[in-house]
Length: 330
Image (cartoon, rainbow, N blue to C red):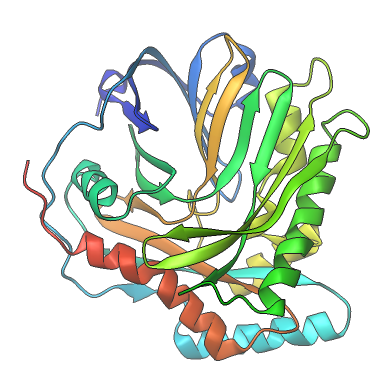
């Protein structure tokens, strides 16, 4: 694939004519419309596009996926890991850890057709499609990582997932815990006293499930750089845990495969006018050669029940796998 064939779509914004791809976020200081992906492990893809217009996602066929999905953690091992994390919580070593697994299936087709199906059958507020040399993503993300308008910045972490609006105290406590973490992250790059929580524990309805969502916002310090913003806030608190550094260490210990774009950042930054829209890379498919990958996880706290946490990971992928199994005609 040539760099000129790259394409990005998000929120009815279509970017073509890619002229530069960088692995260094410091390049985001250059003027331009940048598409950014930061994997959970911190590998950057920064692509500068010169042609940006309001346009629908290009139509493409999809043959469907009918093979068996293989998980990086079995149910037995996942539940055992939940038990071990709860023991560490009881010892006071950690408060919350987002424990994930990655599923894979054979796939030798472009994900553009799958992105079309997701738009039709599982619409999401931060859905996107990206094709770069060596990277292809079709995302139905419901979660905003960072939105910027001038010196204003906002994040809306999701914590709490259910089939219907019947969240328990565990879900609410987990959400509040992550809100505190996000407040702390943003306070590092925002003016003193400007970080606020205008909404807490709101219910959002999505295809096949509902989420608890809160909003944290603040006013950025003068002359702040994107490198400083990402250093302070990445990876997103909702998909790591609290305290964040301890959670990241446990994620490395218990998870069997790299998350890649899953739980990372996917979106765009316009350095001409200091605007940005960046999603958390959840409900996201991506390709590694002829393998289609998808991540799913759950937040583990002292109140977690191992079987229910496994079932939450199943719930999060059920609707998306149903969509991926369908055929889409061009």
